[in-house]
Length: 230
Image (tube, rainbow, N blue to C red; front, top):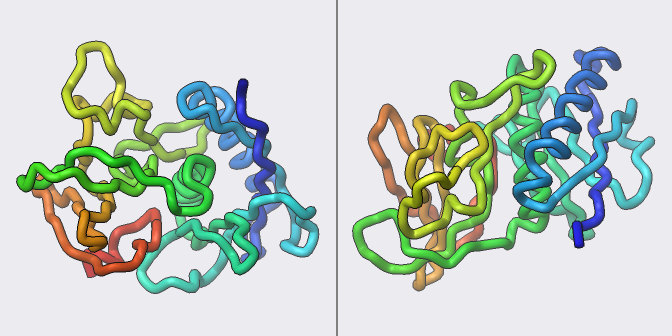
C-alpha cells in the first residue's frame, strides 16, 4: 500500500520570484516527485505555492526561499522545528530550484533526519557504519542534475545505492551516473556515524575522496558542502 502524499508548501519570502515562476518550479517539482521519485522510494507529495508563510495550513511541510539563510556557508538545508515538524530553507540564488529539489527529496525520505542505513563503510576499515539516508548528497552537483520543463532539478540515488556489491542492470541513481554502489560523484558527499558514535563525512573533490571527522552530533544536512570544506 502506497504511503499517503505529503503536502509541501513552497513560499518565496524574498519578493524576488514572481508567482508565475514559482508556480513553474512547483509544477516541475511535482512532475519529478510523482513521476520519477515516488515509484522508486514510495514517497509522494503534492506541491502547493503560497504567497506568505502565514498562509500555510496546518500539516504542511514548508520550503521557504530566503534572502539570507541562517546557517553560515550553505545554500539550503532541511531540519525539524521545535514541534518536530519537517521544514526546509533555501537561499535565493541562480540555481535555487536545484536546491529546492535537493531538500524536498531528502525531506520526503528522511523528514526527521534520523533515518540511517547500517552497511559496510566506504573507508578502508571494513567496519559497518550508519549512513545518514540523504538521497541527493552523493550526486548533488548541478553538473549531474536534469531538467524538467526548463527547470534544473537535483539528481538522487536509488535504494540500491547501499548495496555491498555491483550488480548488472541495477541503477544506483536516477540518471545512471553512478556505476557502483556507495560511490560519490564529483561535488558530492555522504555522512555516517561509526560504532563509537562519531560523525564523519566523505566528499569527492576533483575525483579525490576526502574523509573528515565531524564530531558526536548529527551533521546538518545541506545542499552545499562549503561548510565542511571551509
